Length: 172
Image 1 (cartoon, helix red, strand yellow):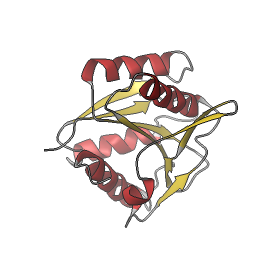
Image 2: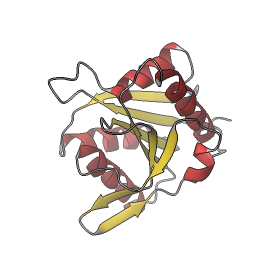
Image 3: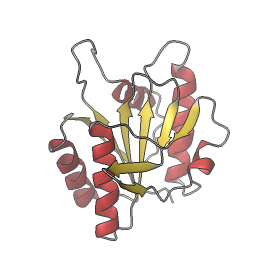
């Protein structure tokens, strides 16, 4: 049986961005029916240090998914990045998911040890910290998605669909 999954995406946050690449890629997966059957998408989370964790953790508490995958845009990156750590000052919390297994046989995916210094990292740290503090039977992953281009979108779509399928079937 497929595990229940929560996917989250951020709203655009800069004037020059008509949309957010993470939200756009999840929308492509929805249109192509490539999301796991039991996936719920929480779109357009506010890009806010305060509000983002509140919205996501409230939805985790409400839905009790087996896995939560937070997706954010990373303008300076060229690959899908599976984030290993959420950090706060000198503290780092690692995801318990096997990132090497999740990214096996992907085309444009890499593991990253730095989820950045902005809201993405803050959200990831807060989600991982909540899971550690309240031993919920949930796993968490943050995925950074680069800007989509006509050349990269099909590869990124295939990679993310594969990763989500592995997470949903417990093969990740």
